[in-house]
Amino acid sequence: MSDENSKAKDTPKPTKAFDAFAIRNDKNGKGHFYKIGAAFAHKDGQGYSVDMVAAPSNGRLTLRTPKERLEANRGGSQNGANRGKGGDRSRE
Image (cartoon, rainbow, N blue to C red):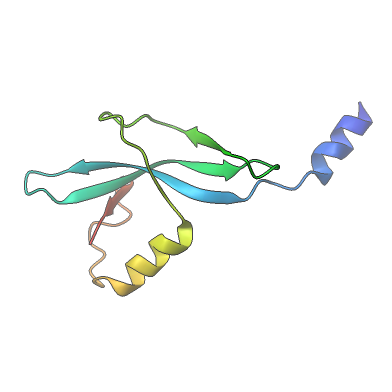
């Protein structure tokens, strides 16, 4: 049993490859991103595991790298009024 515990401690935590988002359009057609999970690369590099806390109601899942999201936020408007409230991610 101690071998199992030591293996768990030695195993590196999987690196998040993508954030998973559901996108819903408001009445004006503007898309709002809702983070619902993350994707992690398989050790063999041949696929991904996607962990979600919700499923998109329209069946469409969008995966974005964390770097893309950060660059988009930096390059876009500095108005962050809609960000961080209830998981709402506005696409600008």
